[in-house]
Length: 431
Image (cartoon, rainbow, N blue to C red; front, side, top):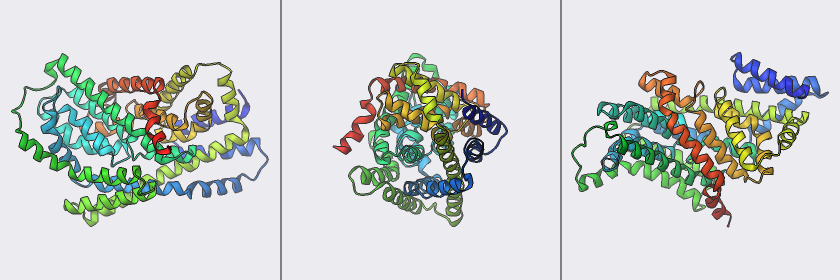
């Protein structure tokens, strides 16, 4: 192991364990490593890199999608989702437990944030499910698992960050995440149905069925979110708008929904704007710090050294993906997903491409791995969100979520063996 690599790893452990902000820690490691091992004006290099990273055109999309999610958080979409979906899920094995999965799937399509999806859907569904007598472990676990779909189903904030760092099409990433996102939701629903069929005590006695006309009228509750999804994804898929334009359209659509529901207030709008500023500042600092560290490591030749060392192991491509899966799961226990992506991508992406994997496919693989990190302790943000909703301990919530984490591992193996699940839709855009 080379001296620069030892210094970088040692400082990384020391700064993160010491509670230093992730972005500042990554930036400072790059500064110290260059100052020690390279004779160069680090201050000029840092200033130029910060400017070029922070002014990337693709990053304009980020605050717009975040603002859209913040505005929608103050609307009645969560109540609408429960009222619109519950009459239909009553007919399925597991009944209203499926509202967690379907509600998160729909809200993920207009949010881009895993934590926001979990919080918005969970504040209504958990109370309803637990008060009706549904199994606590399955209710909480299904919300924790389904909430992670906010990262996979477009528009996705981590996908935007990956697209910027990996220099791949964000539109193709969005299209690539659509089928896996829906597939993972179906897998979650299948698991809930099987559990309910094997153990009927997990759900309360059958409630009185709702007449078909009433069930059809309940679908009207889903019109606002359906309007937003078609507004955003339709304009993207049919080429009417670019990613940035679609994000702006999404903000306009969120404002229209808030006005129509009479939930738009000056206080709420100010809160949404300030929430956007805080989130973008946090993400921006992480991106700038991680990109600078990546370029510093490239100057020191570290990515090539690590990649050559791993390639010397002679791993089969599937074995390499398994190693990377374990690596990102372990990293997710101490770092948030965005930091893990931008910090490690200069090493892991060339490895995956050299093994024959498409960069778009690898982006979706990475998103699923950081989804798992969202529900694994001690740094699982979805766990903190659900802890706030249920007052349960982190470890107990993580235990409830574990079956859904295992399902995501199974799904990762599925897309590794059949990569067309990810690549078919973006390929149709190119063709």
